[in-house]
Length: 194
Image (cartoon, rainbow, N blue to C red; front, side, top):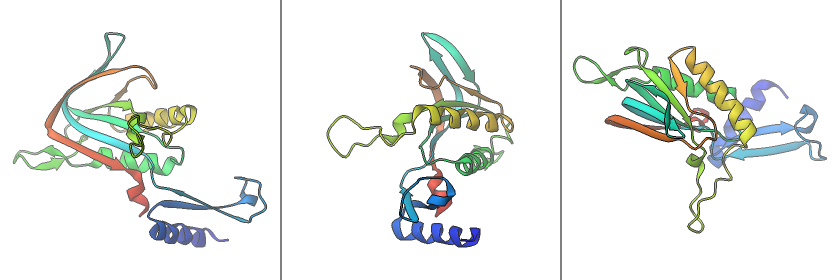
């Protein structure tokens, strides 16, 4: 099957289901099974809460671990279906998003324009499922080993564009911030696949 045809099938399936769908063939390594075609649909991909801040810091064991001045505090959630496509899409959006005020007090400047900083915090609780019972389930969050690797890649790619500091993956952290505005935006990479 040609790459173009596969891409069209992905797009058609995503439109029909409302999810991001991928079509995979057993001969292409993924799974050994008798059926020639496997369909996988995901309704959740990479999620990031973007907060425009005047200052932000992360503390661990009562001591400040990292802090920034003007810029973004990011709460970053990784899902097992995430790929480099999701990382690159999120990074492009974050570094080019024009939500800082210009001289006319209009949201017209990016974090690069103001030479801001980023504090990136891993946040698996963004995938909380609250439909059943009173105790949230986090089963949709990425598996720790995979999520840690993706989170580190995300931070490394961000650092190449904007000065980026981070917390410690899976640590017990305390976050302090002064939200400027307030301005809070939720970025979901599944939007890039619609």
